[in-house]
Image (tube, rainbow, N blue to C red; front, side):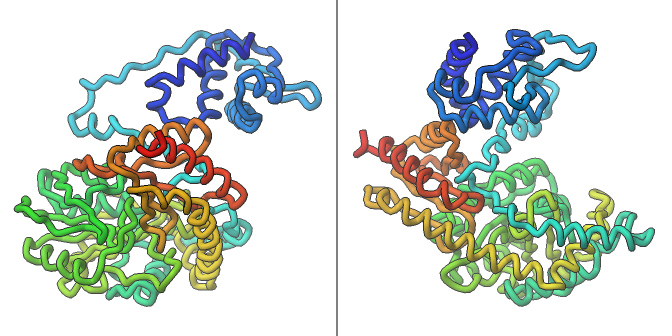
Amino acid sequence: MLADHLAAELARDDGPAGRKSGLPLHRRLAETLRRAIADGRLAAGARLPSSRELAQDLGVSRNTVVAALEQLAAEGYVRGRVGSGTFVAEPPAGLSAAKPRAPAIRWAGLSQRGQRLARTRNAQHLELQPFTPGPADFSAFPLALWQRLQNKHWRGARPEMLDYTTSGGYGPLRRAVADHLRIARGVRLEPEQVIITSGTQQSLELCARLLADEGDTVWIEDPAYWGAVKALDACGLRLHPLPVDAHGWAPPAQPAPAPRLIYVTPSHQYPTGAVMPLARRRALLAEAARHRAWVLEDDYDSEFRFDAPPIAALAGLDLDGRVCYLGTFSKLLYPGLKLGYLVAPRALVDDFRQAHYDLNRPGQLPLQAALAEFIELGHLASALRRARQVYAARRAQLLQALQPLLAQPGVALNGAAQGLHLCLQLPSCVDDAAIAERLATEGITVRPLSAYCLTRGDLRGLLIGYGYAQPALIEPCARRLAEVVQQALPSGR
């Protein structure tokens, strides 16, 4: 029977290899069905059991089965007939159902740096599940308005708007960004310093390539944002982790190699959520000046602060022009927009523009023009106000649901005052990766804090995102999360 085969395959996937994948159950079920179809064990035209029957036979929720079948239908493996059920789709003409051979990873063909970059994969943890840390809720984005603005600027696009840009981006957008940063973040800058990029990753790479040479040292937070680790490592820099405490990045207590770059997230440390106080910000700038180093300030979610006004950016304290300020529109609008910005040092603006042109061939000027008008008409400010209200309500709901856990020794919540995720700190003896894997099998995606650590072995916890968590799911998902965590705590065994 199909159900027996699927049950056996899923049981096999529950072994160490399957758990290591971290995939939710509906994804694993879809993959099992996909293999059966590709191997010819499910012939073209075969009728599948109903979602209700399959869920009952497998002992899983019907939603899990429906999600798996919808995924396969989108990929063309199955098709539904109204009133008849779901059937295996006919393969395209000339395509056999031969079993595909899994390509071997040829490490010998990769450089040592390539092996490091390819060894870890983080995209599978970015699915839009209720508690995935990182994503914002872009379901309410005003698509009709956005489409009108884009159409307007495409219809009126002059030839130069379809070319690459050597100016660092569309002028009105750069001015709008500069105005926003002066007012909301306290950054001292001129519009000419704003470089429009495809996002924070590109901004990081541009800074690393222009301000450091291969083999130079970069001080980086530990734990750290994995995207920054990847980008800086890809540029051939030597990462020197410095531990984060309750106040964010801490100056080195022991002698450390002199840095060329210092990467920090001072307003809301990622992933712990710590906020760097004024005294430590000044100490950081003093360290940078002493080593003649550049500071890369990643201000990724400063707009979402709920209990007080946003904290001024580190760049606002910079009197020596040593801070490169990095921001993005992905959390304010939608991630696929792929637009961010970099505030370059005043003395190096022309060099940054030229290098950005030579390395990245920037364009998308009609898109940038639409975004500039979106901001100028006040739509960005309106969207931000609505988003703060929505996220504040979800945050309060999540905090309330997690309160029972906080009575346990060694359990605490960090980073709740700002951003779109909480950091649930756990005792160091707890296996946070095992907890995350267990929750993933139930469609609840969280990230283990230990996965962000570079050298530290003392941090355990869970990153719980609420940006994309629908209100109806927060309480039941948080209750289940609390149950799994409780079982993993020393007192819960």
